[in-house]
Each structure stands twice: as C-alpha cells, then as structure tokens.
Image (cartoon, rainbow, N blue to C red; front, side, top):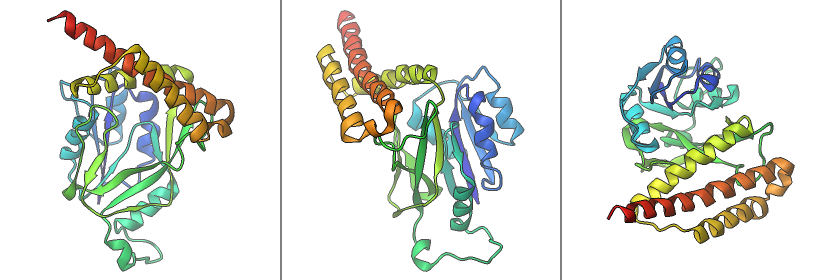
Amino acid sequence: MLSAILITRNEAHNLEDCLASLQGLAYEIVVVDTHSNDATVSIAQRFGAKVAQPDDWPGFGPQNNRALALATQPWILSIDADERVSPELAAEINLLIGRAQPDGSRLDSEEKQYSAYEIPRKSWYCGKFIQHCGWRPDYVLRLFRKSNAKFSDDLVHERVITTDVISQLKNHLLHYSYLDFSQVLVKVEAYSSAAAQQAFSRGERGSIGKGIAHGAWAFFRTYVLRAGFLDGVHGLALSISNAQTSYYKYVKLWAMQQTNNSRR
C-alpha cells in the first residue's frame, strides 16, 4: 500500500488535477498546508486527504518530513501539486508495490531488491515540455519505502536521503512547473530568497560581482552546455530565468550581510 505526500500553499489551481492523477494508486493522501487562503484545503478534503496545517514554515525539507511522519503506509510517493502521475507511471508503480494485476504479473527477483526509485520527469515551461536545458532526462527520487528514508533539512532544493539501493522507473511524472511567465517571476523571487537565506545560514558571502558572475554562468550552462538553444525561444527564456535566480540569490545574500552588519 502507498501513501502520497504533498506540501502546499495556495495550490488550488493545481491540486485537483494532481490528486485526480493519484486515484487508483494512493491508498492514502497526506497534505501538509502552509497558510493557504484559497480553496487548497477544501479540494484536498474533497479527495479524502489527511490534511495538517502547522502554524510555522520551517522550509521545504522539514515540511516534507512532517508529511512523511503523518503517512501510515510502507510505500511513499512524494509529489508536488504541480505534478501529475501519468497513467503509464501509475500502472508501473502499482506493479512494483505488489498490487494484483489482471494478468497475474510478478516482479522478478532482481527487481524486488529495490526499495527506492527515481522517476523520470518531463517539465512544462510556458507552453512547452522542455527537452534540454538540463531538464531532461530529469530523474527525481520520489518513490521509496518509509522505513529507511527521510528528507534533507534544506530550506530549498530538498532531497530524499536513503541508504537503500536505488533503481529507476521507465514512465514519466509530468511536471507543470511554469504555466506562464507570471509564475516564472514568482518562483524566481521565492527560490532566490530561499537560496540566499540558506547560504546566509552557512556563512557564505555574496556581492554584486558574485551575482553577475554566477548569473552569467547559469545562463551559459543552461543555454550552451545543456543545449537550451535546441528548445528555441523557450530554452532562451528558461536560461534567462535561471540566470536571474542565481543573480538575485547572491545580491540578496549581499543585502542580508549589509543588514546584519548595520545591527552590530
């Protein structure tokens, strides 16, 4: 049996399609919500989800660990509200976790040894699934046994930590990460702020020069080294937004340092 876990904040525009894609797959859905003021909670409850609403926001990693702690099933699927489980992926997961199949299929002995799986992900950027830019192949560790896994404590870009042997699934998780450019701007702001705060807590130093250098490198890596130019204007726009996120991270980090120094 499988628990699907999500963390949310104002995801009403995404959540219904996400939860609908879990039907027939998840025995249990756990949603940990942070101060949503839209229909997120009511949508989750309509799908029978177990909903928790802590008072604070500890960061992506700790919040995911809260969701993990509330899950009761041995298998966990970690999914974001802007992601969808394709029918092919649902069938593959059902087979792996031992659901009865109409044809009586069974896993071979080699496949049974794995307790954690990376899932290939296709991501949408403002009207197109991106094929390059470092976005594909994009394997994310999302399916695992609860008994030997947890999320890192990172405030952003958290990851699943496990000592289990990891395998890879074949079918895709669909990631509708950026529906339009308004969402791009919102996420540039959110991710750069979280990354700056995380860097500040580690004692890193920022500056305008570092922002320019890291932003330029992020653009070159995405557009040239990772062949973003093959995605046309979408690849160019994505490369620019990656550069902006990196630039603002180091500028915000520099501003934090100025504020901290002025208080001394």
